[in-house]
Length: 632
Image 1 (spheres, helix red, strand yellow):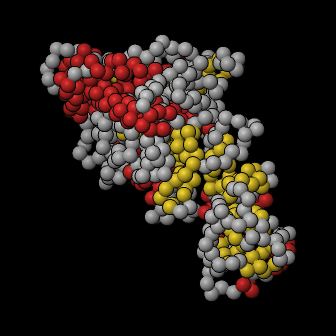
Image 2 (spheres, rainbow, N blue to C red):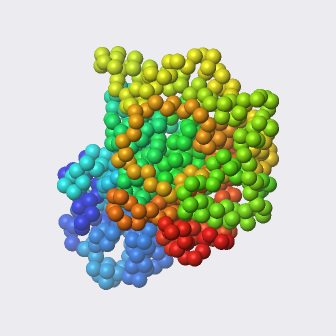
Image 3 (cartoon, helix red, strand yellow):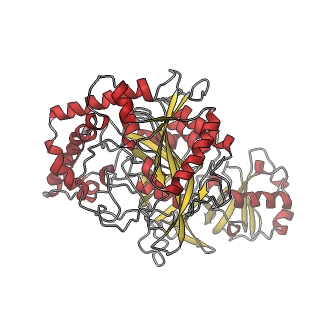
């Protein structure tokens, strides 16, 4: 720690900041204006090339822009200014007049290339600063900063800035956006993100919501490949997010034992966050200082949290991203994903994360839109009206109407085996037979390692305890049968439901009702876990087909909350499935649909995903609040 820096926490004005303990490695600053001895306190660096002329108006305009762009910088940093000048420039151009007009305490200069932004000066040395925020909705499991001795490694942030007001909340540090400049090499520079805690980060323990797992294994030596891609593209990591235990199925309250479930900020604040990427959805729906988050999807793990919080996400095609460094649930189904509040940002990140899937030379619209009557219409009338309004927009965009299809009948007529077994009979045990041995192997490995280290068996949440009871009954032959039936579904989907044009586009797409705006309170006690995945449900379609499924928030509906005893709004989200490996084309198509149809391309943080005056916002009476949205 630098001499004179007594602890990394400072309050500048009313805002707490984390001061990097390592000063910038630059030559001493030159004092141009102000008394000597004023060499400790908040300050602002201005890159000389950022302004055409060093005058009062230009500096004021630049500082105003800083305040608009960055939540870390504030006027408290503007009393002392350091100008970063390129070599060969004369200090004489830095007249003291503007410094006097602006009421500066001091004006300094440096020949070193220092980024714009807020800094904290200690004995004349500059330290970068990060603003501190409380994790009010318990979405984070650890907040992180880069290790100053090894920038490829991370360490936990050991600072608590909100203990009095929010004693159970983690403190998260976010660096100034002004430090970063986007480029072709760093297209995500300055974008802040947090990662799901089933993904490895060099220097930090992976926990997968298990205290036993976290204590058994040391900090990771490597960062997950997908996360590494995001970091290499310039994204800024601020922490790791809570997940269900081992990314399995869990309900808030009753199933979350080792750790508390995150809070979904939508509506009354007491709706379930879903899972397993529960922390990912909760964080991005709550905090506007986060730009995106990572998650994963096996059988709904990223799609469901995104749907209930009204965010943009996608289960990618299997194999679209390298899964190294992601704790497996079942490799046959595991995929890496991201969640955003902005579909343009989603597309930008997806092209980096899923670089194995090249963008088609030409984005082509599908020729068929499947509307499976097995799942449509939904029982919630207000939600169905939102869906119908959106589907009408989709039909107009595509230039043709939807094709209603009964998947049970379609299977009977077109299945590639000619089997007489119904759709539900044939795929009744596909998921448990395929996944149970994989899950059991992971649990057994932890049990062995924990016993070796501590001499005791590890604790598992109720879902894990249930797995130990049921998974051993799945034989090798059953496991092979599970893979066989899953392969049959993929073949059927590619031949009948989700055809590819062979160039990265999908010739047909299928739509599914993920959330219709009905409440799902987190304080409901449920029966002990016993279901292991038997049956056939709509959220199995894309995993079995190994195809991409985009979760699109399209509106919201009112309901009367028993918590707040008033009307609240919940998101309505639809799933759109395309052919395997059509991921980039699918996202591009949806982006173009939203733009052409005048529908929102971004969502909000807080209680509502959209302004209540936006299109497709339905009241509990079934009447659109604007008089539009149900008869396009």
